[in-house]
Image 1 (tube, rainbow, N blue to C red):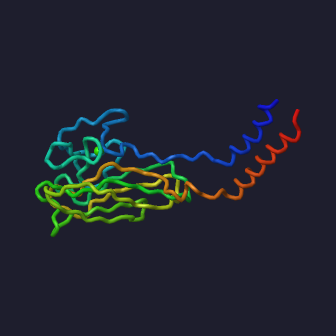
Image 2: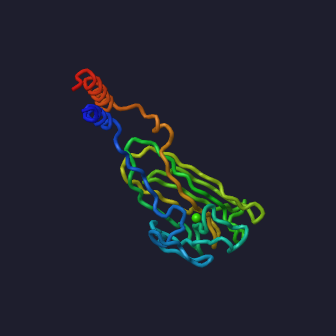
Length: 221
Ligand SMILES: [Ca+2]
């Protein structure tokens, strides 16, 4: 009967830790042509709707390592140039599910200027905006030249107000061919949520679990 005595309180204790869904970004590094299928695009190519993403305005390109040194993707072989040719105002978005309402999240991505043909210069930087649903959470201006090409991680933070949220990258300013570059989009709960104080309902269940444990020890069979 020992296993039965432990099973009940453990069951009650398990109710205090709700299983949380984890938001998952599909094709976060622009490396896939479909689920489980690596992208095999040429060194640069227009992409209307990258797997998992929707391009609702403008045009963008996959750019592969080796196309134009010093260009190298931040992660893997491919990154996205947010302006293919005259792709002003490109909008690349994905609806992400699995958020827990009221929890805090951080989305981090690699951002780089575009070294092609001096597309993003100090006098005319490339611009990018990051939106989560209707809220603009980040605006960036990037520029440089082939001597200092580099990826920089950028992070936007927010509290989820729905279980599904739309993440959008919007190209706001660039030259005629070559906009800001993005790659390696990541999402995580921020540390505050990892130490969330149990809600009253959970505390009550925790109490029941402990009472069950005590009772099981007092009334041994
Ligand atoms: Ca990549």
